[in-house]
Length: 139
Ligand SMILES: [Cu+2]
Image (tube, rainbow, N blue to C red):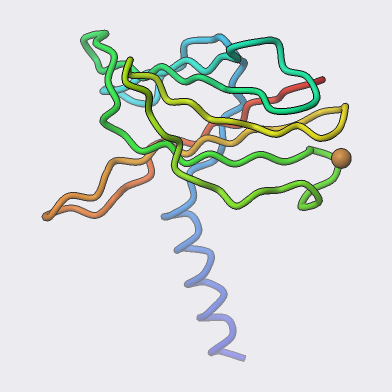
């Protein structure tokens, strides 16, 4: 019993430490990540059934467009959790400095795209999650 309680406390404490809560972010809205970064996510074309591309612009604190962070992308239908979910993946960057996340929407309805912003692991520092955005998409 004491062991279970200890374990539960540990898991809870660890959860609070590790989990950032996800902010709901609107497509096309410039959003602050922290003192150093801000971003905007927008669709290249109006999303519809089929493949659609979410383009993310990331800026540093001086307003310079950068690709210094890793963005981990995933998506699912809000009301059908797990049924259309894909393995999350690192969003690739284009030569022109955008993050391009291809999304396959297979049904009409409400979808949610999740973007996790992380620092890249360096020799002296592990990757750190900075921000989680949940972006609602309706088609
Ligand atoms: Cu569905």
